[in-house]
Length: 212
Ligand code: GLN
Image (tube, rainbow, N blue to C red; front, side, top):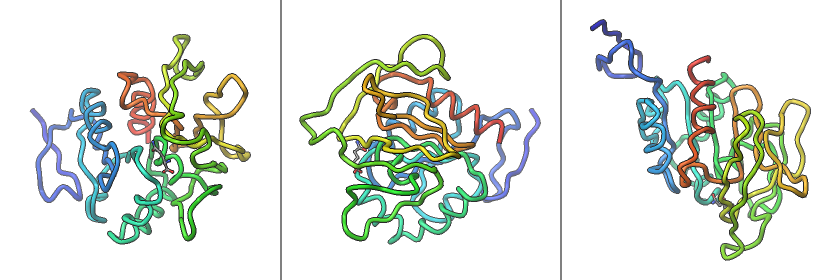
């Protein structure tokens, strides 16, 4: 078997045929669920908790959880600047729910002092569907993923209030509100495919990672 050395892997030898290396931000939230889905799709998953954990990743997932907490922790752990730089450099990043909030250029109903990483030319509104007990599930048409609808679970999710010229909506609710967007190598969903057995968004993301 041929092998290759990769920078950032501390000399670890990995097979040339190995899947893409995908980091999952693991400071808070449902990072384990994402790691599980990505691994099942053949990615080599690593958990990102420190700036050096970003070295050598081919893509990054920002999980669902609480965007205010993740924002604070990324700043405390020195991850905000390197994550912003990685996004600006074109690293493929997929954010679900709180992860979408972190990727948005502007956040409505943020708490005082809340910052996002930015990159996605969208305005999102936090907790747009009300409180935890107003969580809901619905089927969405996502033409980019084929004909079969996506079963989507919303847990205090954000809505994309406006989509800038650089971003493209991928899915909307029946009332027209946008809940999935992409922009180049960035992908964001208001809902949580990582907990429903729906793997097409992760596959779609891994295709971006492989192409990058
Ligand atoms: N309401 C959360 C926030 O503002 C997001 C919820 C989620 O990720 N399921 O970050």
